[in-house]
Image 1 (cartoon, one colour):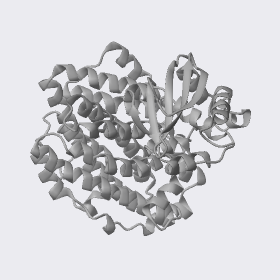
Image 2 (spheres, helix red, strand yellow; image 1 turned 120 degrees about the vertical axis):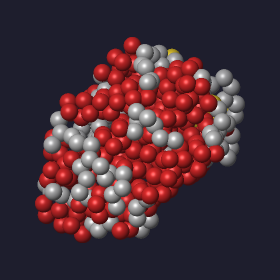
Image 3 (tube, chains in turn orange, green; image 1 turned 180 degrees about the vertical axis):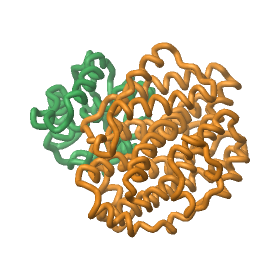
Amino acid sequence: MTDRPGVGDSDLRQIRDLDIDDVLAYLHRDLKRLPSYTELYRRYLRQRWDVYELDFSQDVLDWRERMTREERDAFVGISAGFHHGERQVEVELPVFMLGGSEESKIYMSSQIEDEARHTVFFDRFYREVVGMPGDTVQEVLDASFEHVSETFVGPFGLLAYQADELRRDPEDPAARVRYGTTYFLWIEGVLALTVMKITLTYCRERGFLPGYYTGFTATCRDEARHVQFGMRFLRDSVREDPRLLLQIHETLRTILAINGATSHRLALESLGWTPEEVQRLMIRQLDMKLTDVGIALAPDLREQVSRIEPELAGG
Amino acid sequence: MRWFTDEWAQAVRASVNTGPSAAERERKLPSYWNWIERARSGHTATWALGVRETGTYVLLAWKDGTCTAAEITSDPGAADYVLVAGEAAWRELLEGADPGRMVMYRRLRLERGDVLGFFRVIYFFVESLAALAKVPTKP
């Protein structure tokens, strides 16, 4: 894996040539120094892309003529979580924006726009490529929900209820840290990046779905800003009040406790991944975030992390 | 049977204790049901599930994974978890809407109770909603 220059400055056409590993390396490189919120906002202004510029015409041919049924089923299963997930964070983020510094609020406005754009990306993909029916965004979401696994239902539901909790007092530091742990650390830092790695590696190695590859790689670069913001938020929160580390731990205990409950198995092998590889990938994603920002885990949590279930998606 | 009547509450209690049918269990992985059994077995708490417009609740008292009492009340009292949904959401649930999606979309709001504690048994709660929704009823 090389840390190529150019990830941060590529336009949408150039992004198609990037390797997902380079984007992930770009994300983790800056976790060690954590850019300021203003710097992240300026990056957003440079990196914003137009979701309506994506061309899915080759994706339609790949989907219909080159991918097997098993590949299509696995792909829909694993990406359906984020079809709903992008919508979920788009609607649950505004309450988090109500608290924090002015710089945080300005940055957060950009992340909300990112998530809305990502929702449109998945809407276009499911509508134009997968062929799911619906005249509205909601109708397409309705059509894809049956493919969403508990791996996503649990954390996204938790985020929704934590958003409600935060709504009662958007400045409550403990509620903000619990919300931030679910959203920035687990959903963005582990689930999203794992789904990106699996689906984008499949697309690149097979030469399939160039529109999806371009849009989701651009999404991954957006996620780099999101994760960097979130890790800075968690690190600074714990530095200001070390007792908040317990809120991170308690939230992770819940997330890891529900991680193993999956009602349907998905043939990840058809996308070139074994369950063991997915498990290692998820643990690695979590470890890298925690290590880089200096968040230590209690021994029982370390043990829970080692038992992370690889059943990333069912359907 | 009308919903939110004593007769319905007792039928709900029976249904959540019986759990899924063999055919329903077959549709999901054994490991999923094992997770639910683990979450359920130690669960002792009271849930109050209410209708926003009427202020009526069905109170389900759980002890070590068994629903020991069910009643209709206008006062959730000391329930550990108080969840409220509008009539439209209840109607959708009872007409077959996916209970997991009802949770993910926060169609039932947790008005009282620890969020993290509630989510540690979330799929047990989801499957209990599914069992509740199986009771034949009308508004």
